[in-house]
Image (cartoon, rainbow, N blue to C red; front, side):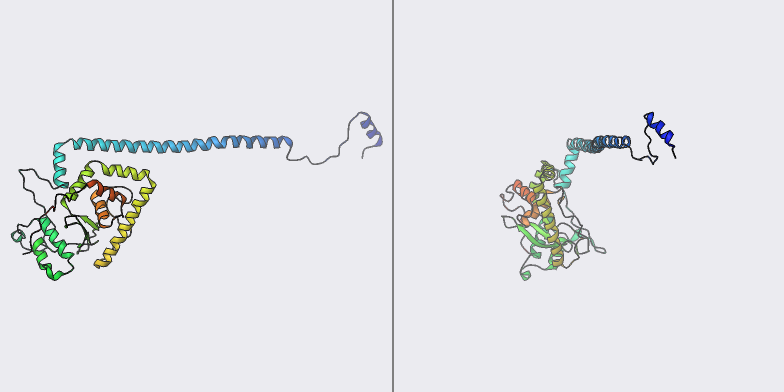
Length: 312
């Protein structure tokens, strides 16, 4: 206890006597420091985020640059091959079945069954495409009694016809140019091509479009045009659905749901023959197939491309 004399002396000296107590933990200086730290963090958040995003973009651009370099290298290699007469001759022979005037070419269809004797002795002078067309006619004949039966077809082809189910489209000359095939061959082998372009002139016209770079242009348009890409994917789904229906009609197991269709669908273009065949068989189903058919011109104008032999 302060004595009265001491309190009087302190008051006279101008000193205030404060009661003793705990000091506050959060002072004004601490609050100011916290505000400064928050301000610095907020000011750095946006630049750091932008830096990370830009680094990611740079990595993506570098990866794309490397892909373009690889693509350019591949195209340069392809260009060199296209300037090679030997390569051109080989492509014409392998893809278009062309021969030099001094050569005689043969087309082998299928393989001989096990245990069979020499089939060359049983082959006749009928061309292979005529035998194929004859088998398609018989497969699609609504009145089988008017045409030779399966035994005659086996004799024409040297084997039983494989997979042909029906004529999907006829050329203006009256002959089929697209046939429908079963999704599986008789031995169970998957066969994803449902519609097969068979006309020689139509195939040649589609090959000319491919050689002109149309598939590359179509693939670029697919990447840039969302509407075209959606329609192309719809064509892919329609093709797969019709192939499943064809499997049920043929009495064979369907292909897996994730099985590829044809022509590079649904993301790119790899074969105009397949896209044109789909559009001819199902008009309006494939927008790029429609463009291919229009670009192929009137391949039927010169008349039938084959002479179908009379039934013997």
